[in-house]
Amino acid sequence: CVAGAQVLTPIAGDFRSNAHLGGQGRPFSMTDDIEKISLLAASAVGLEIAGVDIMVAPGEPPLVGEVNYAPGFKVLEQTTSKDIAGIIVDYAVKKAADGGNPQCK
Image (tube, rainbow, N blue to C red; front, side, top):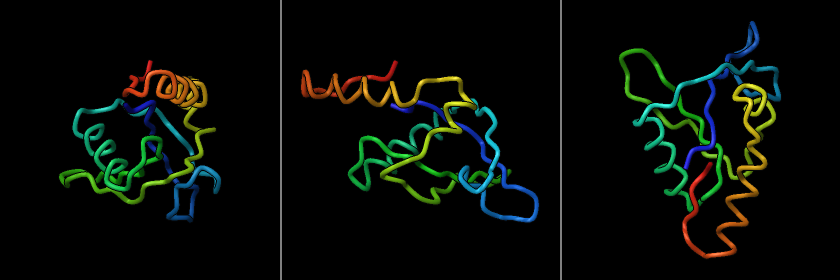
């Protein structure tokens, strides 16, 4: 499942939008296509919990930039007002308890 999504904008004069470099997050309404691409990208590298960076340009198909095995989510929590850390912990606890494929809340 996808716990949250945001658009990151770089600071003036920089092409990198990484949050730890000062990139600013703003809400993103998840689309079915972006969710599917995110889940496929994480699965392709064997991850259940991941941060997937997707680049979207008007009129172009979305492109996966990278898949992070240890994603930072501080800005994502601020942008979405979701407890991303809690969602990850809940997922792991449910997975350990029943060995199945738990859903995000």
